[in-house]
Image (cartoon, rainbow, N blue to C red):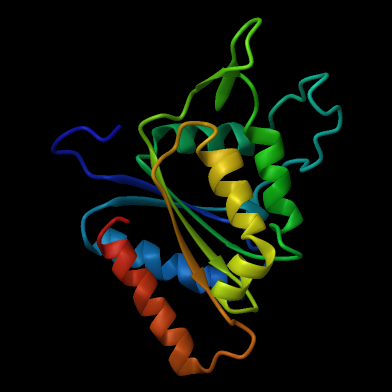
Length: 198
């Protein structure tokens, strides 16, 4: 939780594996605006981390966390606000981002089941989040026809499950047909979010 008088600590988590993607441009726009408005901002590009994205044993045996994952967990725990930037691929996330969540959002780290109970303790309470996701269809179509699967997975089944709320969503599309003017308007929209630390 942010202390009164302290800078807001924002962590941007970029799930796109390609540094030339529009997601990288969006993450940069948010970061620059947030820093200019006085926030402390760190950007975590998942594709640059060195870790095995495969949860080899499921939940039957714990894999030791690599140094990059331990550092990422520390950044998540110290952040007041998490900004997740990612594309929608086949209704979900890129594999590297899914692997990051599988390996890091584990019992005892981001949530904890109670003994002999169906309930659990949420270990990331006090944080807020923003999902900025790019799609190649209108946002309304993705919501009405497909039911926002990637958004539900990240917002409800991951972030809120671990106690992060509110989780706001900005869906940006259609990416593949957007001209430079449209892309510039989206960058401005995300910059405004960054300047307000939202």
